[in-house]
Image (cartoon, rainbow, N blue to C red):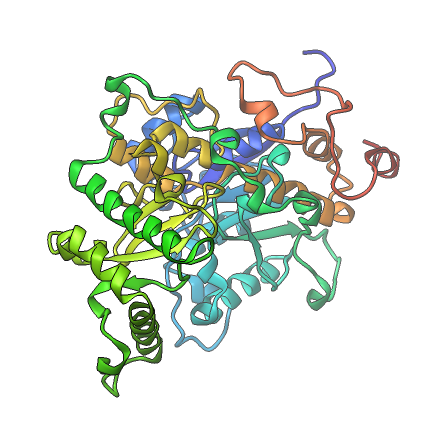
Length: 474
């Protein structure tokens, strides 16, 4: 189209099924290269984005050459491999042999204007301080502005109209921008991008799965069959629902304890024996369970009798964790069958999507969430298609994906932080800051075109776009 602002170019490393692609294309970008070693994920990526990812990234880089197209933004949800602590110095030499080194080699050769990487929160935790320091120092050695303070973002804290999603998914985002030649700055003064505007005036307890996700309505037996709980699972829920109702009858609202219930440790408090070598956390749980059982012994014994003391339940289903506050029945909650027990919570936001074995259970429908609903949790549009692959593989891919709304908001905030370094990239600024306020507005319709002019739908989270347009001649 005549007069259309050229799309900025990005590459998508460790691409999975394309969470970064969804976010950056919604911001006006054009993917010029992607890599993904898992062929099933690469097939889904190609099916939806029209670009077949290359395989192992290391087949395209060497000490002498990087066979990857030029680009303005490099993205990647890279696997975290430990770096050796035996080296005498931080930086690129010490990262050699890891997948992060592969990224650094591309950055060194291609000099993208911006880099956005995603990883698990623990990457910047106490056990990985060394690895985090290597990453930060590597980018600084390569001439990039980067904050040593981690940026942690979860989609459930982002406002729904800005692409937030009802899922707790804390992730670390690494945001680096290339410094112009000769520019020096105090790295201690660099702060991470600021997302307070994306989260302002929003209480995560306001999520409602049925409406915000939204949940599907599976009325046909053929639609429900693969999602419906097994009879044994329904029995687990029936027993624990009886427990919830029993406690409400005994004490009323707020009667259920917040600590994990372990029925195998229910003994009167004067009969409790805690070995001296037990960890403190476990000893505390044993005492709390014993006190709880002692106070409500008659009602709890009757409940156990009604369910044959749960002898046919596996050990992990004899444990229960209530996080649903003032909810009167188990069937009004969402649940998770975890190795540590059955966890129930209010139907607001869900825990991080990880695998089909811990897929969230919708209590009032006695079913697990579907692949489509899981894709919505990650911000993928409803036209996103997994083809004929099995649900287990699709859940695995979604569990490994990045949340589209998180990336979308992080990159906008990244640009706003580094406007002073991006003044010579007006096309990139125009595309990203002139994009719709949510990725949903750009990628909901497969055929939708990205806006070519700035309009009322533009939302800046900090400052006025008109002022920025004048200042940076956008």
